[in-house]
Length: 430
Image 1 (tube, rainbow, N blue to C red):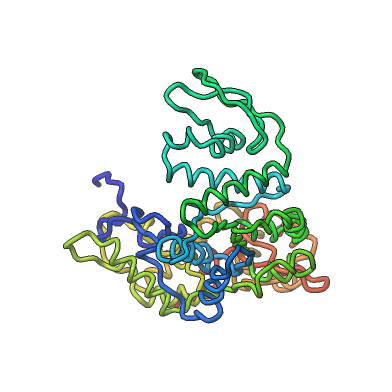
Image 2 (cartoon, rainbow, N blue to C red):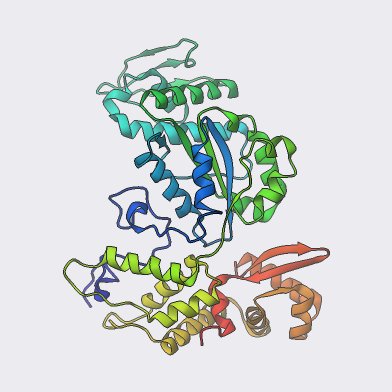
């Protein structure tokens, strides 16, 4: 076997057409959002709502919701690049989304906003111009970005708009004293002014990772929104918060002071339809095809159709499953996998993982849980003929191994769902 770093070359592709990373804002990327994005059919409730939000002058706040794997981050990236590249009134945004962390205070939030936007501006204006910009120099010092010219910079930094001195001294970093939250907000306002002077009409901040916080405890999300409520009202900034289905109703609506400043209703993204998933794949095949060569679909169309059904349209899991299939094939295999081949391989891969992690009776009970897909402790105990206490012990282990997730609580019943990669054990591919 020739050791090349392209698993997909045998099919005629320069890279993985099933890569599940969000489409990149960079035109230089193999799969850029400009070239690879497929608009959703449900434009009235998604794209139009997002467009009207960003058309509202002066900034704002909106929530984007959906189940894991439906393409929320790519959807937001598409609108970010659209407003930066193609709009008459352009909006700038940092290169990547900002991942919110548990326990963030107003201060943590402000520091991350400053770090992400100043890094973007630093790339735009270049290091030489950066050293001459007092605002960006001070912000970079505060957020831990070392600003250097040919001799380096050092000194005692006070606050933007409040004085301060920077001197030149080789191999020394800027030393920063305590900066209050209000001072950090002054820096943020200063960046808005700088952005407007550069010809933009505002800033988009894309806040991600919220579904991970809310999944464990919705109170954590409520605490976060309450903490940043004043900051997200800064004029000229559009805040897009991306989270799980129901986040708006669960975490924002119960807080009247927060709800009152959000734009209309949340943008809710449903899973892609089968024609949309097929269109996404066809576009990627074309973009990643080796020039002037024929390419082969790694799996037959009926495999895509069946996986779409198995994973309820969640494209991330469809693509992950196909990538898993290809990674288990011998290098000499270069034809489309049939339905029966795909079914047998995926179930064999899933069973092998279960067998590696679980033994004996616990393995058998898990396979029954996989067949059910969604269940309560009591339901699984009755089905498997095991005591509630034993099933609870198994569930604790499965949660720790990420084999199942807690879905929702209805009354006294806690529902669990099988991790999506094991959905193939329900024998849905047929």
